Image 1 (cartoon, rainbow, N blue to C red):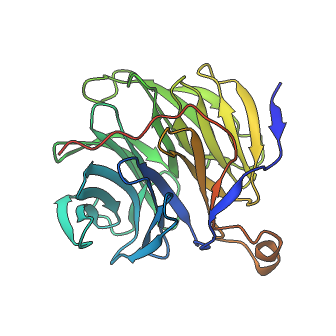
Image 2 (cartoon, rainbow, N blue to C red):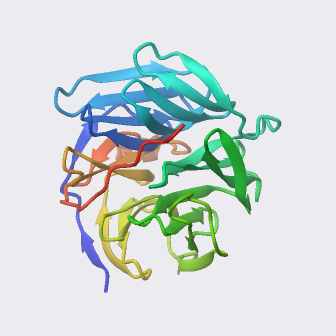
Image 3 (tube, one colour):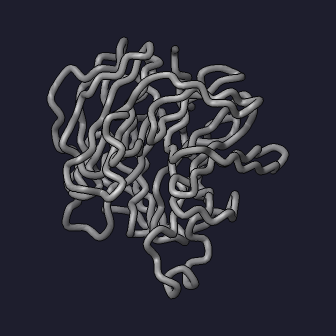
Length: 295
């Protein structure tokens, strides 16, 4: 039976992003990073000082992976770029469907090996127009295709299992992965089929015990699944469209979640003023930090 919890968290940042996405945390600086994809913005919040910055971007971007203290890897609609954290300058790194301007980057996460999985999707959410890519050493390899809205990319702590979804059909997929390379070694299987439930499986993270925390777009909740696919807890959030969670805090024991107001009419927006905000769930977790990307 799924335990249901009311929201007991707080708003970390009330900047209302049209499409808040791609949160990640830098433990070296105690900083949360996330995107407003449609607003072409990279957001930065230092948890210690509460200093907030917004960095305008020249294109839509959705995924950030740490490289080192001075560099980040960004997945954008125009390919992969290395960002200098001091100047904000972007240097082209690798192509990602650059021959298809109708698509953009979407979800992604660094594998424990230091490689990266990144997904793409149609800017108009055309059916089966998206894919998931493996990126390592500047080489980009397509690993899954024919996905409409690819999300939920995350990995078991030991790097042997990868997860992803197509939010349109709301099936959480599970696939065996080489822990040394981050490449799939088997065929994906359906771990959770929630097509008949309200909302859709969106972004996910996997904690140190292998439990998956999933933001359920359209349902206003974050669900927690056991490693065998059983939904054991549901946490309500004050925004109908949570998009992706991230472990934050110096001990990775807190959970943040991005949200969005994309597609909401005036009535819906007025009834949920925190739509688009960065929220903290208000529950103690056993998280793990996203690994750095190895150039």
